[in-house]
Amino acid sequence: METVEDERIGVDRPISVAVLNDYEIVVRGLRSMLEPFAPHIAVVEVEAGDNLSSPVDVALFDTFAGRRNTVLRASDMVHSGLATYVVLYTWDATPEMLEAARRIGVAGVVLKSRSADAIVDALDRIVIGELVGFNGPARDTRPFELSDRESEVLALIARGATNGAIADELYLSVETIKTYVKRLYAKLGVHNRAQAAVTASEHGLAPRLTSQF
Image (spheres, helix red, strand yellow):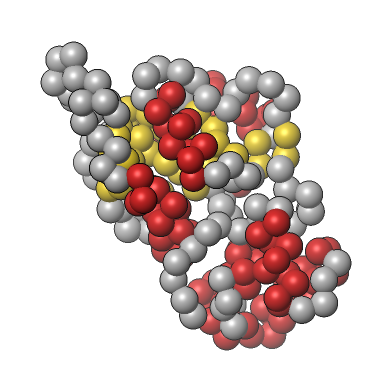
């Protein structure tokens, strides 16, 4: 985006950040983590599932439930020219993904295990031209082998959603959701929703959200 000559992003003016994801519940959660850092961080409203329509400093792409399309979508964001920097917020920083992200021009990769303070610190470094998240051994931060759909269901369980609410959110039947819940219990080694929510929180398996069901 165009800036006044010699104007320093994050020093002379706020860092404008657009949070991008297909799910409103995910977008709200990441926004809620950044909003306490105003006015240093200016969160730009973008509806869930929408693309950027105006220039911002940072497009912060939460890759939740979108692993298969992450690189393609990030590439589109880079080439749109609307974001000065494209940053991935992910728990799935495999060596292959990091290499692909670097190759298409992503400016940073921030792991979901990081605190809100660490996210903002990463953004501060990125807007002064530093590549963040590509150094050191890449790793998959998820200790459980969950499918994309299982990850979606777990995130909603962690927020207190009922099976009916999850079914409505994901456009699936309640019986299908029950099947996913049983699989999750087995993979996580838990016996109820409360234990599943605690495990999700402890291992960074679900975004921090603000909406209630």
